Length: 116
Length: 114
Image 1 (cartoon, each protein chain N blue to C red):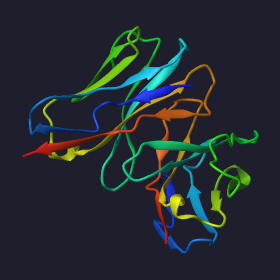
Image 2 (spheres, each protein chain N blue to C red):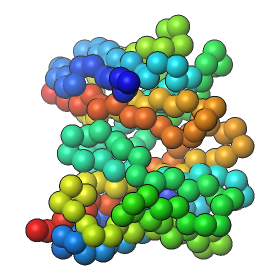
Image 3 (cartoon, helix red, strand yellow):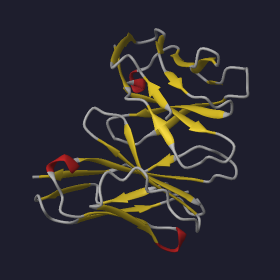
Image 4 (tube, rainbow over the protein chains, first blue to last red):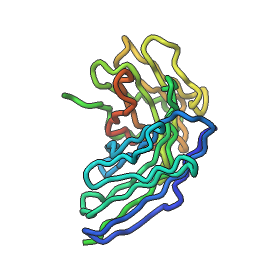
């Protein structure tokens, strides 16, 4: 079975600084999708960034970027110029590709604190 | 447009009672997922609906849990004879699989079993 591991239960960053959240996953598939979701205290899960495994280029969305290392099965999230509104739980998620829509596998989450 | 909505937002029930949780997906989304999130934990997959296909129920933790999706839209998750370990946030998500693998989540229902 696929597993997603987030080894950092909690992290802190100073406002305007950069922080990197780690995620590793286990799979024997070659085609899949990886996601980072943000869950603020409001509980509303919000997609931060998505990476297709067949793409070598790392995805970026404004201040958010990933470091996707397919061979190492690593998918870290870098948040630049951290803002107070970035404080939330961050979940890494994996989904099989090629029509396997039935399951997402989520990590246990990393709580990010942003200090003013 | 409107996002995924869930009701109630919070539910407190006595052990042994049945509860129903409702999810209204985004209009036109063919896929619908239910997850359970226990305190401080990640998301645990419960069940998945896709169009008219048989649902994937492989994540349901016991036969006390069931779900249905009427008319390919609204879904109801039912928990019978609730136990204290059922206390959690229940999240619903929908997806338009043709264009994107992204899931759009509702705000969840916090269930507390006393």
